[in-house]
Image (cartoon, rainbow, N blue to C red; front, side, top):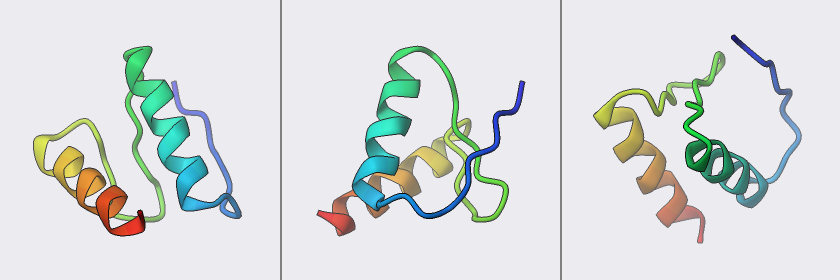
Length: 54
């Protein structure tokens, strides 16, 4: 199932949402950017972006 989300959220809000989804065993895959938490490399890039945003 795909639930679209629109831009306009802050990075900290995005990270909070993705973390919440992950705890509920839901994956995040961006349709407009190269961000896919279903793969190891996607999860790594997500963590790198998270670290750079702090």
